[in-house]
Image 1 (tube, rainbow, N blue to C red):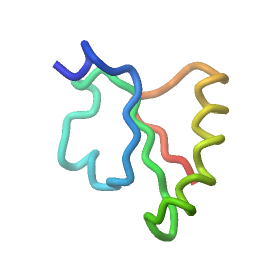
Image 2 (cartoon, helix red, strand yellow):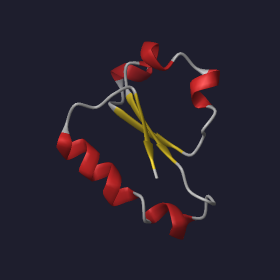
Image 3 (cartoon, rainbow, N blue to C red):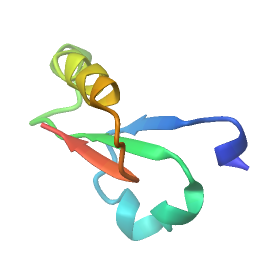
Length: 65
């Protein structure tokens, strides 16, 4: 199962919540929300992921803008 292998999953799929039972997965999912999915654009969001991890109290789904 996924929860045995991962604690955090990062995606750009904004529809994931409609496709999967997020709570059942048992991982924290970061959804990167940007105006495009180009590497240079998404790279700018990575520090925000680390900030949220350091803050703790991770929910099942976290959108990063």
